Amino acid sequence: MTTLTCTRRLEFDAAHRLMQHEGKCKNLHGHRYVVEASFSADTLDSVGRVIDFGVIRERLGAWLDDNWDHTTILYEKDRALGAAISDKTGQTIFYLPENPSAENMALYLLNTVCPKLFSDTGLACTSLRLYETPNCFVDVTASLSGSAA
Image 1 (tube, helix red, strand yellow):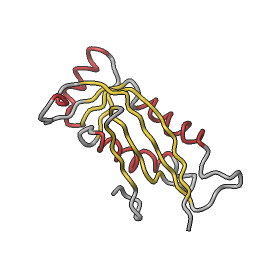
Image 2 (cartoon, helix red, strand yellow):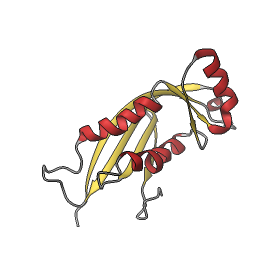
Image 3 (cartoon, one colour):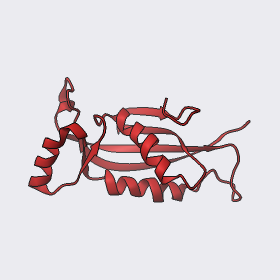
Image 4 (cartoon, one colour):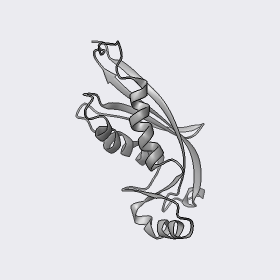
């Protein structure tokens, strides 16, 4: 059997910090993140695609723009810092249920965001790569049962 995969690259800028990090990442800092979201299928649609690249941009790109781009992403246990930032600057804070490491951010996109955004397509995001810097990235892949490996 042949599996076809379609991947879209999306970019956003955000600040974060990692609570309890042993180094510099315990401090608030920013990144130019890059997401590569992949969708797979055994057959193509009537046009000859897994999914239109534009649909990925419209859905996942819009979610990233609305929720993570030019925001601060914090662990939900870091609400005191979030409140201080928001109170002083009016900046939007996105609270992640886990520490906002690249791994946890990628898992959140794969397991929480993408299933909601693409439920009507019959497709699932099967893997996701998140670059935190041009030299550092994480990969998460959906298991056969639909949860991340």
